[in-house]
Image (cartoon, rainbow, N blue to C red; front, side, top):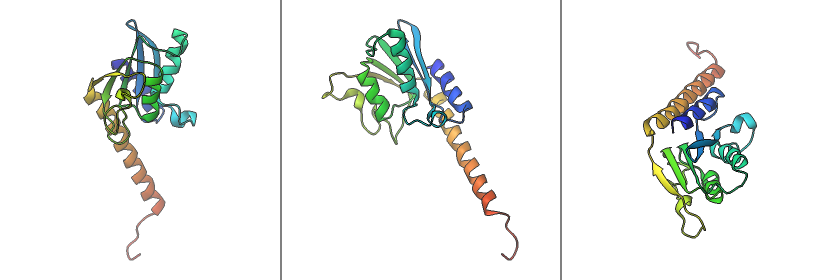
Length: 160
């Protein structure tokens, strides 16, 4: 998870929501990714999607059956679906995403018995570090937006 946090810091440096991910196979990282949606102008540029693409290239197959995925934030529907489709057997999550998480918060796509593959999940690994990075990012974003709004409104003059 420490390496996933390093990936999240890369996203943060780009002004992106700081989410990071790594995929491990036989005790070796074979895929790294971080959120790049705004940078790439692509809905698909989530940390997990970027890491899955890289890991598949290394393995030489779309099936990542002997891998573990580590992600700083609970996967969204798209990423949870990709984890299931890639046949990744284990997912380690830093912190939960109560608004869009699909590994137990909103729903749990990783453990739907109707699918042909389920994923074992470990929750809360380095949770505080993962959560704090996200909370600090959104707090700074709200402060920046408030300052911009105030600047657009112009100066307040007495009697106006």
